[in-house]
Length: 288
Image 1 (tube, one colour):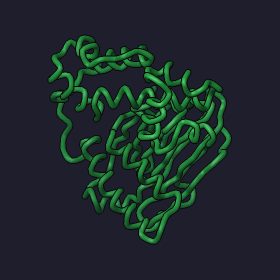
Image 2 (cartoon, rainbow, N blue to C red):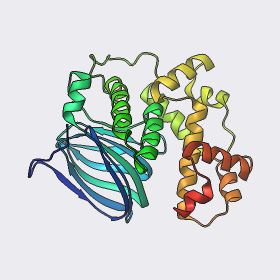
Image 3 (cartoon, one colour):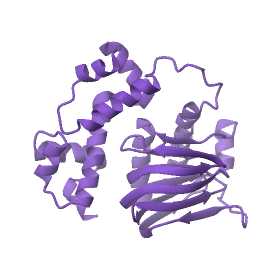
Image 4 (tube, one colour):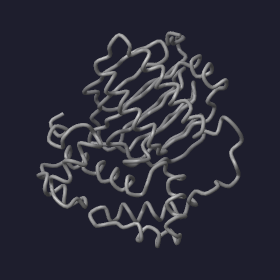
């Protein structure tokens, strides 16, 4: 099932300067690992014949524009950094980014999607978090950098698993319930997120978060995982790592200063956590 493009059927206009790219093709998907440099605002006009999954690893903040003619504003952060668009969805708008934008795009062949799901992905999902998808994307990118003779088989297996996660996230396997059972309300989730972001440099306890949400520990842990796809501890750590990436690329601060500013007890604690999360040390990340 090779990927094909009918003439005039797609648009891909992206602002900023492309400074690096790795593109790997298989019969079922195309994986692009990209870095762009841009001013604080970057224009984007996009319409492709494949189902597209974006992972904005660093630098994406807000997207304002229209999706298939419907205007909206979407917030991205270090955890809610995924976007899914059905085939032939048209997006036109402006990103708040920078100074660099690191992202991954996976273009999934529509025939492969239909064969696996017995249905089409028909609704976009923008600015969402999913720990399993993010972890799988990181592994896919590592494999795609130096694909071997069985990479196509690996990618097909990864794609099948990713589609199962996306089917649940978009509720294409059944009607979406009118009330999300067990999860945090939108207001409570926003209050908890705001509390965490304002205190990344401070110790944040589970008791603190439960008080903000006005829930018991047991209820809060279950609801938080249902809403954000991960635990509170992992969520806080992910936000700290994403902030660390921005400071490593956007400042000359030493590792100790960055570590202490983001709530790590010392530079070694920071380096260990950063390497576990990204597969590289902070110094190596800064040199890329």
